[in-house]
Image (cartoon, rainbow, N blue to C red; front, side):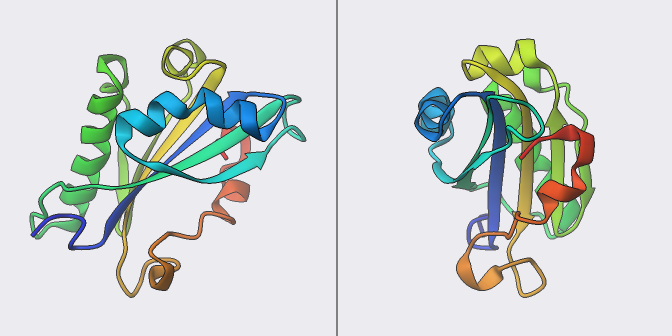
Length: 154
């Protein structure tokens, strides 16, 4: 059984210096292609930092399920970090099913991947009956932005 079949989705939110939505999406085009994902939301976060946008990319993952949800979720995050590049692989992954996540708050590293990139939030979500918005196939990330506080990742 693949993670996709078990209902896993990755959300990658990139905070980028951009004056408008088009510029932000263009800056993230390489990551979208690299991860074979698609943009699900672009948000103006200039109230926290002028000229700031966040772009959220979604992708399904094919990591095999192990029967241990925490291990499967964490592996999906680590595998995606590896795909982003060797500089990302040292990021600490936190896990509390139905999700695992990491924040890369290294503008010099994120900026190499995304022109103007500042921070990156990577989340793996197990989409079952207990996960947010399971009926639509995409987790509801709207209220997580507020809980991120100073991380300003979305």
